[in-house]
Length: 350
Image (tube, rainbow, N blue to C red; front, side):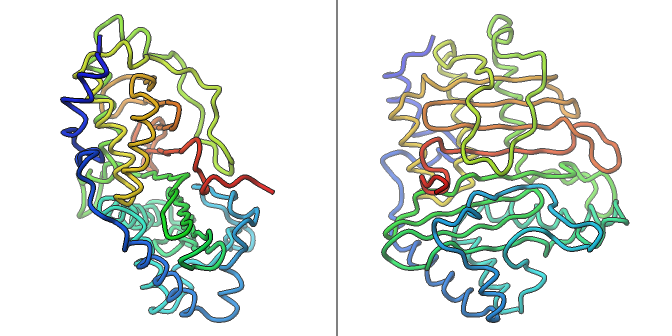
């Protein structure tokens, strides 16, 4: 099957997606953390005193690990139980700084997709009238951990329905943006003026389906699991290592491996360029042949399916087995990228 030395020499630098930039051709991203730090400082300054108290936590606070991607609400009181301050409660200056912080902390695709995910809440509000009080594009909560500075460790998080990004910076270097969760509901818009639109995070579905269909019958038997994967677990410090691994990359051809790396590249491509490079370096150094791919369900659009990708440095967990509010099948994505060594910047609960 695939020969690692020849593959790395001929293919790695030309793979599209998050790996489109060669390992040897990454742009200098040194100034980005200066901009992120300045924007975080501006964001905090734009908040009221009470809002700053609600937003800021110590760098090692346990709240750092309290991430989630489902609506976390007190339905009786009609308030969120998330910490921090949501976009809807910010004045225009603070909101602009918060969104710029998100923009600087993601790739161009990552930012577009994040804001698309927020806008999907307006569609859900129309489809779920009883939930309109929280199905809002501004129902996303920002928190800051530690003091934004050129030295030391600090970070920030945006958390809300179908979106959770936890960025950590140490001594002016982005060390982590994980756990990095993106979900989407509906995936394909079925009604209204945007009917048929389907262009947000969908490479995570399409590239995986293409990879599975590229496998021969014997490979598919190894990759395919009968039962769908369980739900992605929020509020977890580490990704689970107990799920089956499926087909090893050692059993893939070069073309199949290239497709696998395109898929991984979609996930790293959600991140800032410097961090995408760091994550790519980690899994290539560990050995791309140590990656594995597992798939469940049918490889047909609109059919329920899940998959995971595992390796020494990363864990990817994807699901599309739920309906949308109109009961259209497999039109609701959950996907997460976990770094096994640097989630939350490598911190662990105290």
